[in-house]
Length: 219
Image (cartoon, rainbow, N blue to C red; front, side, top):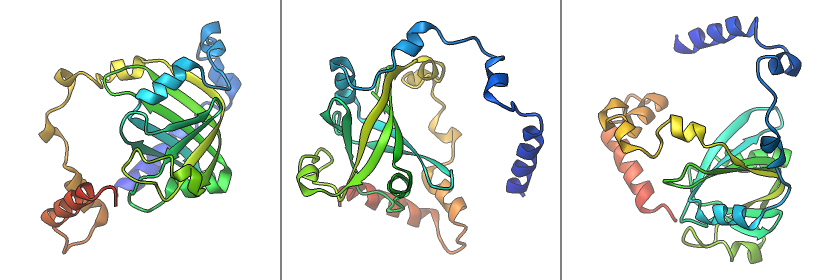
């Protein structure tokens, strides 16, 4: 029922949606010169330092049919390696093994990254060509997540620039006093149970599975 309502709402809104880029630009002012000029094709010493401080990167990818995906990758600060001024490598730590991001990259050869630094409002956007590498000499360098990964996502930089901090500020991301109480949201196990729709599965079983996955996260 919910899916049907959502689809109907989208179809209704799409009828008078903004039709093209020219119409969109009529709603907004042009970006200022600095917003355009800050985009570069290689890393500076300062953007290298931002990557070295980042413990979380969000990876956007798309498959050959245009289906989009955004997936997080985390590790100790600096877990993403800068191979040279135009290349970075992200070790693929063990996850749910769906391989959505890696399969998308193999299909299209593209990826977009956003580096996040806990406690900081500065983020870094990086977009470009991408591939999945299993070259042993590369993987042996990428041990920040505990051991050499099964593969690495390698991105060749085509554009890189610091992103405006307003979204993190508006969202109060690093301000605990603005966070909702823990019981204001369903738990991870509750969300998973609803998604799986398996009558014989219990919350306790899912919680144990989640605990085991975190305990053995590097295996």
